[in-house]
Image (cartoon, rainbow, N blue to C red; front, side):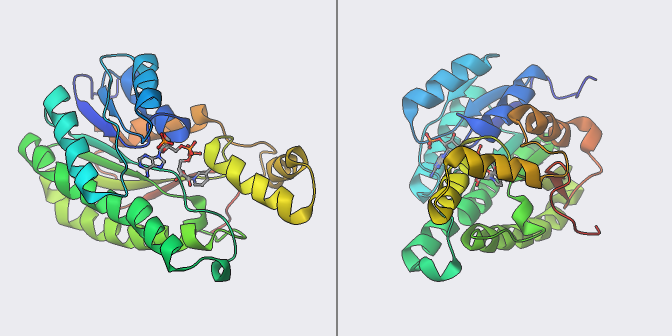
Length: 259
Ligand SMILES: NC(=O)c1ccc[n+]([C@@H]2O[C@H](COP(=O)([O-])OP(=O)(O)OC[C@H]3O[C@@H](n4cnc5c(N)ncnc54)[C@H](OP(=O)(O)O)[C@@H]3O)[C@@H](O)[C@H]2O)c1
């Protein structure tokens, strides 16, 4: 299916590996030129090369507001107006709520909530001028159903979900959609940190903790980047123009809300 976005420019934060890179690859396959974010410059450059289609690296730490402005300026200078934004970064550390002090919470708020809001504010003028905008935030299935030891991630992402729901109403008349994509247990970097922590807590091998996670999914497997990227590209497409303020869960049936 032609997604109708060929020739557009996208900024994909945390696009240098895992789920963000899967989004960047799917967008590039649809003819979109991508600016790839991530803290590690070399990794972002390698990812941009692999993604192809004229992709460029725009490294920087999204937890820093000056870096956020610089990332958008570099992306715009290289690719022109940014009309597709995918916000993503590494997740907060796992552990009981009680085990995390204010420093951890403030870092998570910056990285996983305020950064996404700031990036949206920075690219909205481009989207308004173009009469076309797609904002997709990578959040988590834990927003639908909290998961053990993921209280910080759930807390800050619930806040982001509220802010983005409000934003979706405010920009709807401008041809801009705002949606969240909720990964389940996906076989990428963030999950590795979670099952390593589980293995340590239970005193079992990491592989056993990982297999138990896969077994807990109704589809009896972990998700793959290829399960995720196409959903992101669809939400950025012309065909998703009447879908806004939504949360699309990609989790193999793991979370069980009625709606
Ligand atoms: N995988 C899962 O099962 C799962 C489930 C639920 C939610 N999620 C969430 O989905 C997101 C993506 O997951 P993933 O597994 O693809 O993560 P990942 O493999 O750890 O990749 C994270 C990406 O974000 C970049 N990044 C991390 N911190 C950053 C920062 N402060 N500033 C700029 N870039 C940053 C990383 O590059 P650098 O390291 O170079 O910065 C990398 O490109 C995470 O927030 C995760 O918590 C994942």
